[in-house]
Length: 370
Image (cartoon, rainbow, N blue to C red; front, side):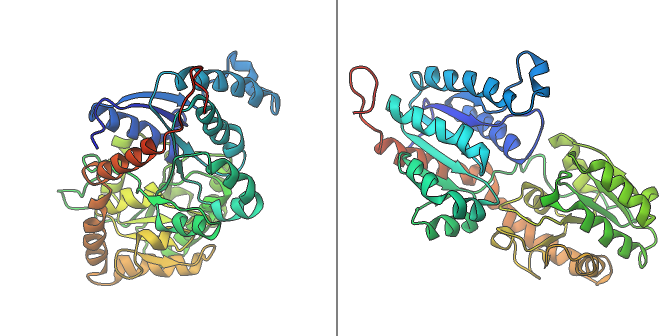
């Protein structure tokens, strides 16, 4: 099936602020349009109007939800298919589920692109309700074999369509890397990403590698507490908290790195790991969630248990000091990363859309599901 000419409503978060799912939504919209599709974005995180509503916790969700539902209803009359970027928790209940039901009522097929790393616990709590809604969708796509298995436990079949990496922006350096040992973390300051473990591991690495330095690219509620932790660990002078970076700046940051760290406690298919792989940077990651589905321990990355700074430090020291290891990991990971380029992924989306359209609910004269 050709994507050209297909009218798609793409429902999901959009930058700002930047983030994994928001970046994937924006990137997918641009790539689909580049193939000739007519994409109508429907942002689940549209700015509050007026802005002071953002300060009213609890009430503000209602002021965002009502315009969102109105826009879904209007857009459903203009497109051929909904593509819903779905996550766990309240994001599912407030945005993904209403999008599925409105599309169903309007007779528009829905592809649900579920991406929540904590899907396992979410489905344990709300599996029946989620499944009831998902049965109204035409197709379920997930980015990793990890989520495919999670949904299979609940009797829900999913198609794996991986995340997309911009291989033009994320590529290996052509120049020699700096002689210092530069550790890079590209996760936000959120408890599930456990930046504290990365900082504690870095402090241990500094005991062996005196010229080691670290850059942390991200934002979030724990930023200040992590700055204070770096001070207590005595590494403030060699840790740079650079904030959120755009794609171009992130590509440059990876190309300056000796090792990319992923300390997360909960994960699915982290873009930060894929981008590091595509940039030719050795990866040290926890084995949380779906990470072992995208890298192989001792082959394309080194994996350690979550929340274990000594284990993470030991893995980093191996990459920095063990002859030939960094080059071997980086080369194998780079070869794997090619499968995440758009040239490979677009055929999978075309197949998912074709499957969804074949299951399109019939409409009556009023545009309602028959």
